[in-house]
Length: 189
Image (cartoon, rainbow, N blue to C red; front, side, top):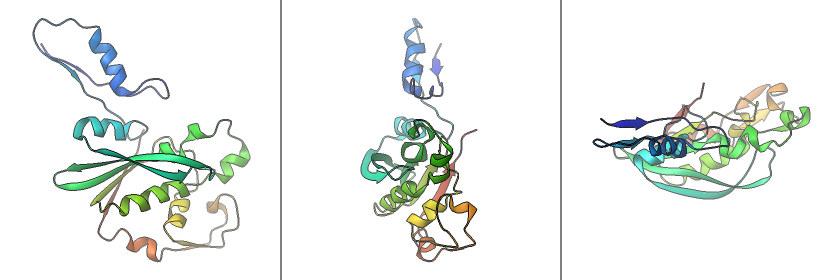
């Protein structure tokens, strides 16, 4: 008999790999294999699950979080079916858990700009595909911060959450940056 453990992570407590291993450590097998298969649902831990399946290397860059505080961020560079792929977890740079005590003010000023900075870095690595996981985000700007980071112009934007004041979006060069790169998103429940 083979035993497969595939448990999603427990937010800020244990990774999928750690939980699977804990379960497998409790089983005694005379014949068969114990298989640790990390999984994720498009939220935190997705890049790690893909790393366990495909390997790759982690790229660390200096960026900004959802309140524009400097933050060391990382994302996965891997290969699948001869494609160079970057896997970026939005929660790692603009996650809700980065707001220690969310207030009305922090929620209104939280921006996805830092995620755009990671996208730009991934584009500079010559990837064919970028997968962005959206789960666990602490922003409600509809991705307008990402677009600003990539060079889009928001007409009518004043301050705070750009969704409240932006009248028109001029994509300009931001659209051109993805002409040769497939952009996919993975969402959690």
